Image (cartoon, rainbow, N blue to C red):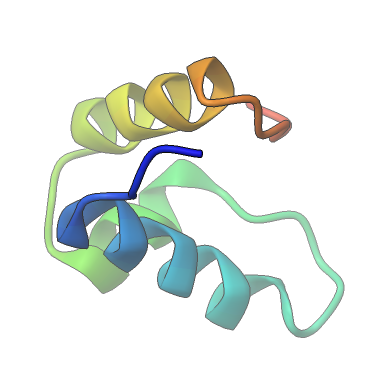
Length: 58
């Protein structure tokens, strides 16, 4: 398994924090928490998906 970059780890941490209440996680919320654009979140989700992880995109 390849190592995840620190920035991808930041996205994963944000997803964990935002999903704790059981509600769907929106890219705008991840973007606000990480401090990036929604387009950057979309790119990160593509990287994670390509790495074999499954996330729902809305």
